[in-house]
Image 1: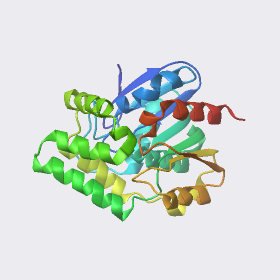
Image 2: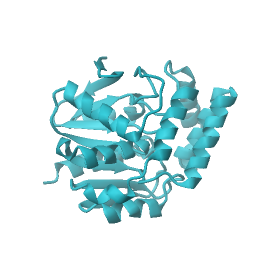
Image 3: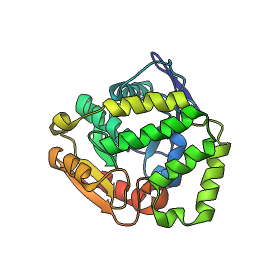
Amino acid sequence: MPKAKLSAISLYYEVHGKGAPLVLIAGLASDSQSWQPVLKGLAENFKVIIFDNRGIGRTQYPKENFRISTLALDTICLLDHMEIEKAYILGHSMGGCIAQDIAINYPQRVSKLILANACAVLSRKNKSIFGGLLEILESGKDYELFIRKFFDLIFTPEYLGNRENIEEAVKYALCYPFPVTQEGFRLQLEAFNDFNSKERLKKIKTKTLIMASKKDALIDSGEVRILADNIPFSEVLYLEKASHSFQVERPDIFTGSVVKFCSKI
């Protein structure tokens, strides 16, 4: 798979399918492969572009602090590299912050915007939770502990109760050749911590779908309302039986909702 040689980084990306371009932006500590459960379904309808943000996966980057706006510009530079003028932009969690920044600062590049379990600013609770995960990585403790703690945050108790699902996911993460690093996680988390779009959301003029899970342990209904009340042309879709990573738990509903929204005039 190719790498885009951008100004300061070598960004790993993949392209799947044909049609109108759809860019998927992953969240904190997640890379391009986090989209696997929905990739096939979306690629049947779009030219799907997935990539590794700075701080994760196979993207090579200078080991220095960056901001969400940096990650947004990386995405725009990738579109430039691919000679794509405009695309559907979908961001999950921290990727939703990156997507917001793109819609605010590069509105001409966004066909429609989809924010999946995203927020306008990281809550104090989540800053503490993610800080605890960083401490596990920094302590040098068993990487499996980090993975299991992370999974506890992003899946429903019902999904976690299926031991076959979870043990398979843990095994995959432990064997994955491009694991989350302490340094990469810290740099992404610092960027996430500093992001706040509350006063800028009204600048988003593109049609926006806000996808939210009622069982999300990280993003609550109040945070969803901040997005919905301040993005002028937005609509909210609530999923009843899924948590933060509902693209994994309910890939059929996730894919169908994206296709339906993007196909509407």
